[in-house]
Image 1: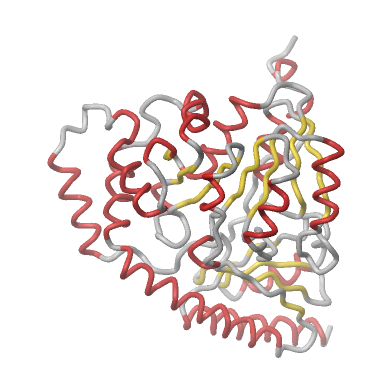
Image 2: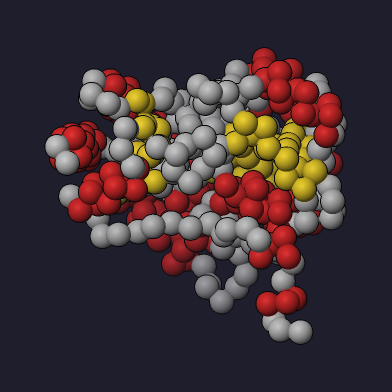
Amino acid sequence: MSGLDCIKISVRGIKGYTLERPAYEVKLDQNENPFDLPEELKAEVLEEAMKRPWGRYPEFGNEALRKDLAEYAGWMPEGVLAGNGSNEMISALLAVSVEPGDRVLISEPTFTVYRLLGTVMGAEVISVPLRLDLTYDLPALKEALKRHRPKVFFLANPNNPTGCGIDPEDVEELLSCCPGLFVLDEAYYEFSGKTAQPLLLRYDNLIVLRTFSKAFGLAGLRVGYLLAQPDLASEIAKGLIPYNLNFFSQTAARKALSWWPLLKERVEYIKAQRDTLFRELKAIRGVRVRPSEANFLLFETPYNPKRVFRRLAERGVLVRDVSGYPMLSRALRVTVGREEENERFLRALREVLEELRST
C-alpha cells in the first residue's frame, strides 16, 4: 500500500482550495478590506506584544477576546468561540458533529470550503441550486431539509460569491424546518447589516459564524469567531486545538474592536463605493452585474471569463475567476476597493471588452 492509498477515496476525488495569483498592481480578488489598519492601532498591538514573554503560550481559551466579542455581538461569553478564521470554526463544528455517511446540506454556488471540509469529514454533501437569478430558493431548501434531514446545514448571508442576502424572518422559517445544526455564515455581516443573532436565544441548533478578515481588515492575522448557545459552544470547543489562537492575533482583534467607530466609517465608505461600482458596471455594454450585500460584485460578460481575467491581469488588475462554480460559467468577482482602485479596474475592463469585441 502506498502513502496515497491511505488517503480517503472521497478526498482524493475532490479539488482542493485553489487561487490563481499572477503579478498585480491592483488586488481585487479576495474580498479583503482595501484599508490597512491605522498605524496607531498597529503600534498599540506591538506595544502589548512587547510587554509579554513570547516563549509562553497565549491565554488559554481566548477568554479576554471572547468577552470583548460577546460585548460587540450582543451575546454571552460562554457562547463565543474564537480561532484562526471562521474556517477553523467550520472545521471544528464538523469534526464534533459529522460521522461517515451523515448529510451536509448546502446551496450552490457558495463558499467552496463547506463542500470541501464536509467531504473531508466523511459526509455526504447535498446541494440545492440557487434560483436562476442567483438568490436562495427557499421552498426548495425547506423541502431538502425535510427530505434529507441533514446533520449540518450551511447558509451564507450574504452569500459568496453571488452577494445575495436573506432576511432574518426567512432564516427563521428555514430554522423551523432544520433538524440538525444550522450554520449561518455572516462573514459579511458588517456590510449587509443583517444578522440572525437574536434567534440564538430561541434555537439551540443555530450557529452564527463571523470573521475579522473583511470589515476589520485582519485577514493576514486569521481571526474568526462563532456564536452559539453555551452548551453547544462547549461541545464544539472540543474540536479546537488547545491554544489555537496566537497572542498576537488575539491582541490585534481586541484592539480592532476598540477601534470599531473608525473602522465602521471605512465600511460605510466601501458600501458607497460598492453602489457606485455597481452603477458603473451596469452601464457597460454587455456586462451583467448582480446586486450585492457584501463587499464584492459578481459580474458576467459575453466572453470567456478566463480570457477576461488574463487580460485584466496583463493590465495589473487582479479579480477572481469564479467560472468553475456551478451556474457561473461566465462569471468573475471583483472586490470593492478604494475609489482609485475601482476606477483603474473599470478602465481596464472597458479596454478588455473593446479589444474582445474587435477580435
